Image 1: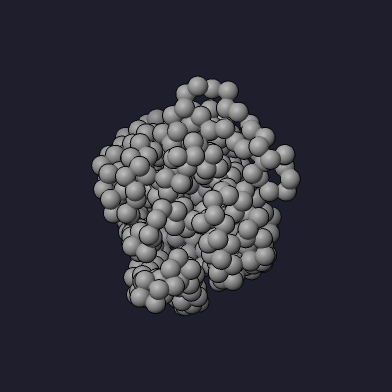
Image 2: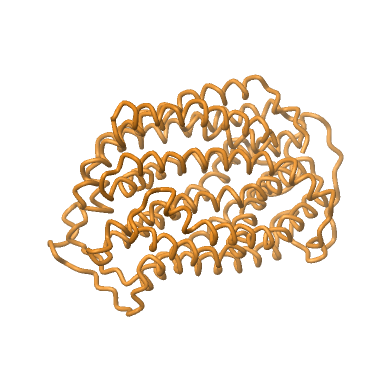
Length: 487
């Protein structure tokens, strides 16, 4: 491939290369955010269907399976954190380079990110394999749920190298201003995931248990396959989906997007570029791990207050529904991150600042609307996944609590993503660590354990902390130091 010419750049110029060159800000936000929103919506549905399949396994393992899938979801979060630790470095460097028209630099960054992703994925897989039995004990799962969790995580661990290719590749494409191809790949991956997870799990879906008079009571969608792998089959479906996604992501990168393509000659490790990845990615990874570890401790609190099984499942069902509110926030936050990096690369910090505020306003409106839905339709939403009495009792209360803070959460997501896009990952880490350990952890323990408010009290602490975090991220954003970060 012949390198693209690098144009001269003067402060205040528009984005110089890639898919966003020449677009207005509103057009760029729409082009970036809409495909990501579709992608995230499908991923959330897959997460929900995984829990739906677990909730329709044999009655004797149903509650244990939901608890195991719930804890497994936290390890899925860890996977995302681990991959973004590498991917955010590629995304930030590519965004700056494309904004400035330095296409050779963007190509170097893409090659290095994809070359390292396979090795990084192998390391993440080893962590998952080793953590499985320890995690079951740490979270207080019943013996049956602990075995199911180990099965789930160890099957998932085998797919981590291909998961890394897919997830890191998608983030690099986002940095280049290309979100349609990752979204299209995600559609394929999620369809494969859902179909294969159902086929391999052996779950028979009771259509009569779904809300809205979907079918007469007792109507079964019988699984026609005889694999009957249960929770391990759900994980195997996810793994197959990752493999399909990795193949298509690699093909898309080799074919290329405007002004950027993957070249085999760039896969050989180069110390200078890897150091740049680490400078941006290590604080981002540390920030994600800090937040993840706090929420893992919260699972320990839930295990401490749980007399019988079911609380972990209720907690995760509520989080699954809350994740639907993340969709517009994360999608618009991805747009904010890309535009922040590209406008800074183009020497236009004022446009970067305006883009973030515009994105934050859109996200607050959409997530606030979903918050109202959570507060008014909790029981209906719960029944889609489970009709277990303990879930019907608790999940609607948790959804009401989280619905009340969605506007603050929206602002936090967008500003946090934009600071990452600017490469300001050190301050993102410091804010998240302080808010998580000085506010979230003490609050959940006091309300949930000390005051005896149970799972509801834990959610008071979890959701109340969003108010403090929004204030802290807002302070960093309006301070403006992120505009001077070098990546």
